[in-house]
Amino acid sequence: MLLRDSLSSGPRAAISWIHIPSKAFKLLVRQYSRPIESKKEDVYNEFHALTFSTYRKGLSAFNAEFNGYLTKLTIAKIDIDPSLILNQNPAIEAYRAAHIANSFNLTPNSNSNPRSYNLAVEEEEEESDSSSNSSSSSDSNTQLAQLLALKGYKKRKDFKGKGLKTSSNNKAKYKDNKPRRRPRDPALYNSWLYDTGSTDHISNSKERFTTFTPNIGQLRPINTGNSPVSPAGIGSIILEVLSRKAPPTYTKLVLDNVLYLPNIDINIFSRVRHHDSGGCLIKETLYRGDRRCIAVLDFKKSGFFLDVKGSSKPILHANFAFPLGLSSYTTKSIEP
Image (tube, rainbow, N blue to C red; front, side, top):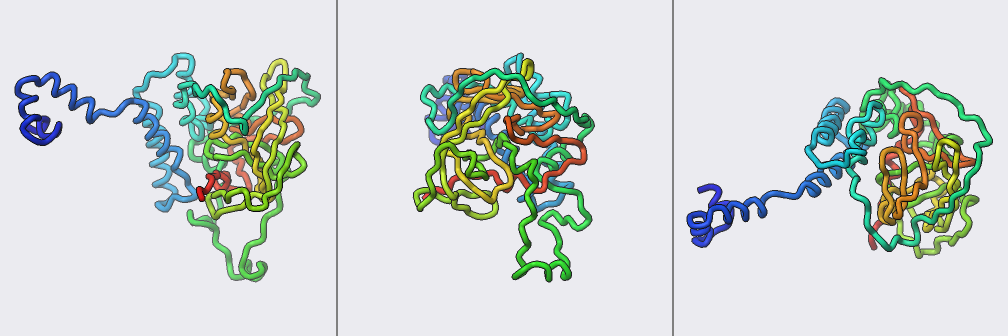
């Protein structure tokens, strides 16, 4: 009775279940079951939208929900390319915490007409002229600790989950009770982050641009998570990115339609635009639409930071914390 009624209303549904139940059952399954890809996308989107900066239920509740999504992503019965199966359960806890959702982006993007504002690649092999600094990275990083480190939260006594307390003595140090901007960290200011949530390429230095057009009202504001921000301009930037570790090989990467935001603390390479151009991320390697490698990452040592010639690459460790919340710079264009 319940199956019959759930299919549709009216006598025709009842007749179908009585006379051709197999066909009616298939119709029911087709109508109410959802494809695996759709379910996978829902879980990924929910996980990706979960950010501590906007979470209001406290640290323990966030930790429980975060680990719940990790469990769903890990045990989801989804057909996965055997060569990529390690992406679901890598040995490094730091990678599992912040980046496991990316292992579900397994279907190559078949966009045959990449947008011009994304990537143009030119390979250039060159021996690294600087010795690599070895840095120990703890494999015992907890999932939450890595997430908080990437998002820039330090463990402080006055941390309440909704911001930091400002004592009455400290308020006197600020003009109009507005906190002064903290000094920039040079290591972060020159670094490039492959941001999985940003919809725009962003740079904080006008000197990097090879072509530049000032914003005289033609650019829409973007939402950085706190409030709308108007870019100061737009242009193209050429980066030399490590695309092979042995021997060290750098690839020229041309980013078009890069927004200029002088007050942002890091530079952002948008994963959304990379994917829209036909590119993808598989394990620790970034590919463009024709599956040529354009960059390699090191999740254990530097997370999603690119190794760009002439720029710094932050090193992650158990007690590392950025002096900014990266989620604050997850941008989204504002429609007019």
